[in-house]
Length: 300
Image (tube, rainbow, N blue to C red; front, side, top):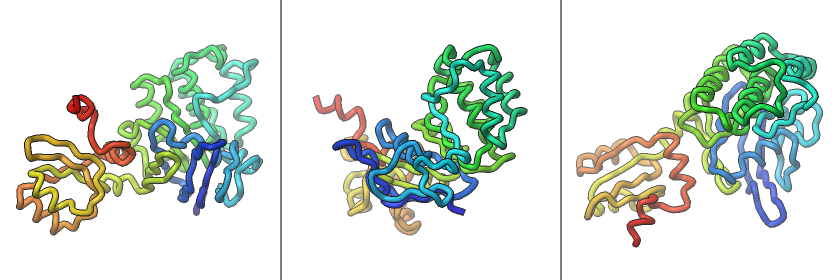
């Protein structure tokens, strides 16, 4: 079952095109990572899906309906980010009580266990928490709501490394017990890669890649060797990164659309073939230049 379907989705703010004809779909009971650099359009996309913003053009359907100002979508979705506003008159314990009234599948047991694990004081108030503690508390709400669609937009902002690891572990364990559709936006792909089933990579408002994680790991390869041999191998191939590593040697990351036979022939000619991590694929595909930071200093 398709939970989210976007077709030629576009969002324009004055002269800025935040989203540019994005089309994709997300299936029920999957964890999708929304990956992109700062300013790529991730938050805009998520807020359109959540029904907070209205698209400029194109179509978006969530549970088969248009999400903007849609009560059904609101009842079956939760949006968690570091800007979450909670009632200032209620302490943390009272917020849980009100959340249980709003979300019919609210799991008070897991909420209280996570609350105790992260050492919250029930008499504390949300607005008095540090940035990291706010993110942790917000994430507990997102996990405990058990709604059909859960959206986490950079949920670990301000958390230290240990707390982030605990949150990812809690998310995975709770998802396995209570499957639902989860979108997790982050620029820390290396930390969440093992959680994800699919990755949606966007840049400058455009969809670049939407693949299962295992396929993304095969999307690009690194090749290194003499320049003349690399030129022969990479004729008309899509290059994402190139670095000179010797007088006549280069290391190049290129889209992996080679046959096994071609790669084997390349190895026999002295070209080294290496794998590229999913995080590096996303980094190089969205890079504005084909070189690295060293090139800035080498040009002096």
